[in-house]
Length: 113
Image (cartoon, rainbow, N blue to C red; front, side):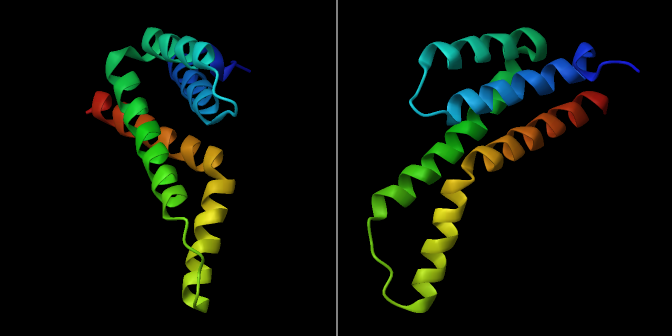
């Protein structure tokens, strides 16, 4: 059986996962992020690196926005919204990986057309 990571697609996927994991890790490890971004650029090109950075930046912005609200939910509807936001924050690594995967799929589709 062929190792998926040995193929170009598998290498790009592994590089995307490493970048997403590095960006989502706490505490922030700038060297790990730089290394992951460099590897992604090597295996997927600058375009993939830029798309992945855009997705990471979007999720980071959403997280900061939610953190900045600092409001306590008053109504049951507001509580549900806040619980949803907290669930998203709790699982942000998985969500980030999904977003990066979507970006990779879009790029792969563009290259196939």
